[in-house]
Image (cartoon, rainbow, N blue to C red; front, side, top):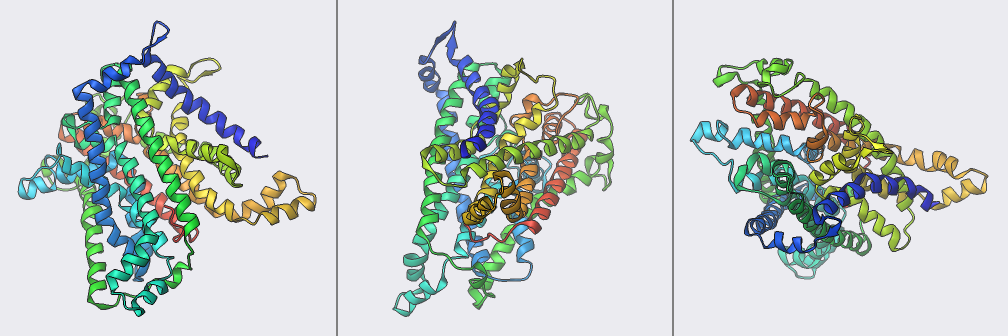
Length: 546
């Protein structure tokens, strides 16, 4: 039964992930039908490439450390304190995570870049500096730490720490000896995910870093799209693949350790009203951080979208200009506003594909069994870290002949977006499916139900809400996919992230304002999708999973 369920996900990943990536690597490392593995050493010996590898690694480490430093106090606040508006604040801090990286980069460009808020007030510009990149990465990954660490922290029994204090340990000593060791696996898992997302950063670095800074993903894009240097792009893809594989392997180990080593309690029993000046001050500091880190950049983005050229008042001029194909200086063959409808249609199709593939994969993984299934679980996570640029370019050179000649088909974009949505579907569905008592399925089988009917009558009612949440996440991440879509979206059918990037790449206040307007629209759509799924989301805050 499990092998039957795995057939569709395996075929999907083989055709639309493994094959395109392998084709790119093969074309880059083969010459006249002979493999040229010596090319790997030549590329890695290039001083410019080593600078890229060094910057990719140290900025990911710096982003991870800064995110932990800023987000861990918030993890405590959400885990241990109860206050009005807590659920709304939880949704607010999660909005950046589902925003496309293009929107994140655009928001911080409006705050820190030329003509941005800081430039207008104090003459300070941070775009094209590493600080802008680091701050945008913290903005994007803040919720990963808060929800992963805070979710587990909320279910750690506080009586254990209280018992240590009764036995004479001070407040800090009790926390260090009792709570901290229990939190280490969750902190490690969150840190690894933040490192993964920042190690493979593309849109943020491309918009805020300028030509001076390049991560592996950005360099793969430059070597592929600008220089057509497939050998170098292939080597960099292999390096990123190995790095991502190692990160995911360590992450899987931390998750298993976290699941097996802890005894958790009901999260509702651990949160209390703030007591004492220290806890109130901590809550105030977290609220101030959320305002400065998240709300101010998004607010500036909205303000810039409503400003007139040269700061001449406020209005909807930039939004009206989106209705004209010629307003972008010849950037678009169709009005930029059509990108909204294109993105919605593509995202809905991608969501349907991700639900089918991810749902079947989650069902196959429900029964823990052997290394083969665990390996398949890790395979499903690879699209989150492997170069989306490579996947997109791989689509162009592999899906161009029967039986998969999709070059002119609209389905090409949803297929690429679904690759990113499937891991979110699996991670959302799997814990709920594993919580279903297997004896209920067995009882249904004894009563004569077929496997399909048993799933429809037993599993589906229990996982319906999780299925809707998975659909919401898949829709949001599909809507914002940029790395692969930038290669395969046709000029007459651009997506929102691609349209924003095109507008930012052209000079002029009108193009800049339209980019801000499109980014605002994209932000609102993603935020609404998130708020809806937050209301549907089952109460799993203590699961330790994002």
